[in-house]
Image 1 (cartoon, one colour):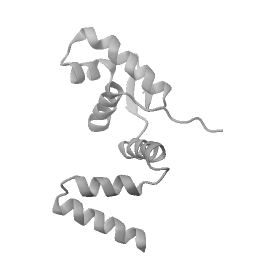
Image 2 (tube, rainbow, N blue to C red):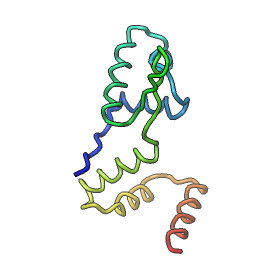
Image 3 (cartoon, one colour):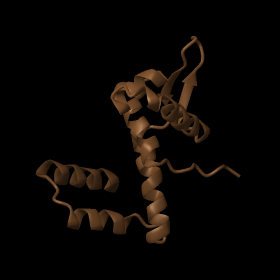
Image 4 (tube, one colour):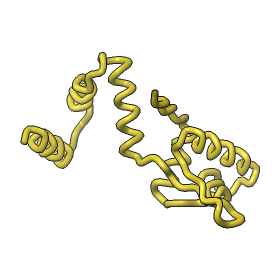
Length: 125
């Protein structure tokens, strides 16, 4: 039986966002980006990366003396995972109530509405 992926914490998500936006980085680079160079946070970032690696969300290149970390899970994959978990727990597995709620209660721009219409059209073909 496949292992269920673990969700990520807000702090871990901040690390993933940095890796998604800037690409592979060292612990030092991530510490500088996330904590404005506060060297005292180096061990915090190291621990976050260890947890993310255990969750199969980041990979580590051990080729050089300084390890480089990269996101092993894409943003879309994480969004999909989280939405499915919410759908399972709140909506008996159906994503429709989530989409309906978002469409009714969020101010969608014209471009966002067009994108949704296009997606629905594509799914009907």
